[in-house]
Amino acid sequence: MGEKYRELLEHKIRELGGENLRVFINERGVDPHYLKHLDQLLKAEGAAFVKDRTDANFVFDGHCEPSFGPGQVVAFFKAEDLAFAGALA
Image 1 (cartoon, helix red, strand yellow):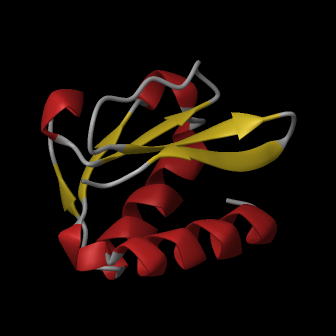
Image 2: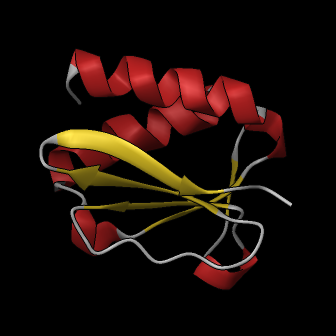
Image 3: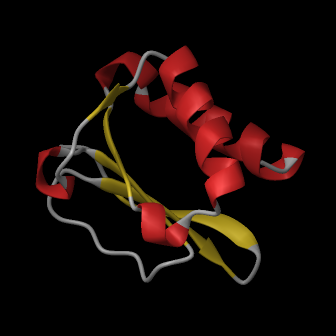
């Protein structure tokens, strides 16, 4: 994971409270090499992982079209930048 993305993601996770996050990673949108780094970063911040995006309050869609529901924050790439949309309830 590039340092620029890592720092931005770390900042957002801390802002939201990593220990409060239930995370779903859309593996179709994430390079397998970066998936490992993303997993390690989120675990280090105290996030829990869920198997279904409807149970998540933080979704990492990566390069896929972002999709989120009420009470969810989604992270995605937009024009080579990491962007976030949505809000926690």
